[in-house]
Image 1 (cartoon, rainbow, N blue to C red):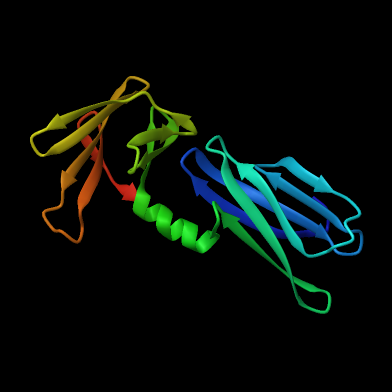
Image 2 (image 1 turned 120 degrees about the vertical axis):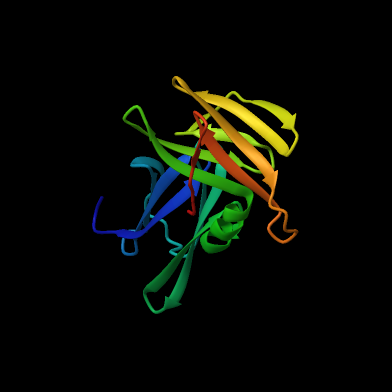
Length: 180
């Protein structure tokens, strides 16, 4: 990376946490966007220094846009949007529609993500094969990680405001959820 690096963002998606870097050469008109260290957009000699650049992130093809706005004189502000929402709004909404667990199985760090709207389960960027079933107190979605039996249980909290609680069980032991 050159001295033109003006923005770095970490974005948590179902397939993993992605690092977005943006270089903006205000004297050369250069714009370079890298996702996870891989260059995805390069534009040289752009005469218009403000505007936006749109690209996709991750295997879920989330639409990302970097907005470049003039603040005053030769000062610029850079904001990142994911799927049409500011990064802050996107992350707030994401915490409502996903559950995430971090665990270590057989010496391997695993990041398990449940998409509550589709009940899709991701582990370290891979969408898992699952089998769902209805049980007395809710639903269970079964999958395996290596030699481990895993299950996401969806049960009522008993409180209308809290709604449904999702629990990850690995070999019968509950794993604590994290907030991203």
